[in-house]
Amino acid sequence: MAVKKTNSNSVSYSDLVAQIQQKKFAPVYLLHGEEPFFIDRLTKMFEEGILEPEERDFNQVVLYGKDTEPDMVLANAKQFPFGSPYRVVILKEAKELKHIELLDSYVKSPSPQTIFIVCYKYGTLKAAQTKAYATNGVVFLSESVKDWNLSAWVQNLAEQTFQYKLNPQTAAVLCEHIGNDLSRIYTEFQKLQVVLPKGSEITSDIVEKYIGISKEYNIFELQDALGSRNLGKAYNIMINFTLHLKDNPNIKTITMLNLFYNKMIRYHLAPDKSNEALQILYGTRYPNLIAKNVGYANNHSLPQLIKIMSILREYDVKSKGVDANIDEGELLKEMIYKITHV
Image (cartoon, rainbow, N blue to C red):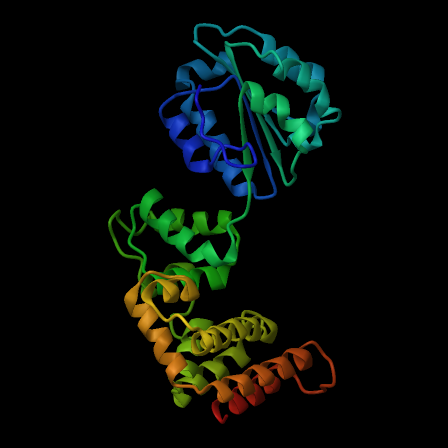
């Protein structure tokens, strides 16, 4: 089977999904890596996409690394299918299997009538350990989505997998609130399927009602208030943050504001302010978002921005307990006051 591989000799997630949907199967698969989400999704697709439901009782076996031995895994892989073109053997929690290297003898000469899937989550096998899988089957390396690309990934997930519309700002709010927990993001979209028909737009009102993220009091609204120098709005959000510090700890707020103002400085210093350069700087292709961020930068002079970065560094240290006896809420009030009066 011809497969498209990356530089790490690993097949991409989208290519592997396409192969499963087209029912183009290899005799062995190794799914390994630190990010569990993609391995879980692919495993579910294998469980449901190879055999018909009536064939699975006799021809699909799921084993768990901590509860089995290599000999048992190999014995199952070598059995012939009964009334089905394939026998499917899925080894979950493969990281817990003792002496996993003993599977190599089978992987080097796999049965053409068995599809053998090894799910090795929360870890990465060395190149020498994946060689036999890559030679005789397919290797997939599951890596986390980079922070700079997370918002775009969430948008694509909403649109391509769940058939929802999701604007970049709302996607960014979801990412900021949930973080890089891909499984939870996926679960939140699954929950929306109960109340939201396909083709609907996931608005800030829907996010607030069903996911529990405030559309008014979040870091992106604070950034907008500070960037547009709307003092009243900034103070209202600041007060809300002080009342919900568990959800909005200073360290998190300062980190996001540091990135926000850093982009303004980079805009002022950038020799190239073409549309292409600004798309790279702000990580978006949406003209209205780029224009909004350029407006924020133009509301501040370079000396003002340098002073603000100094304030953020000062309160980053204080929020970590260095040279400060004031509680976190008061520190936030002080910091926002200083920023708005530069």
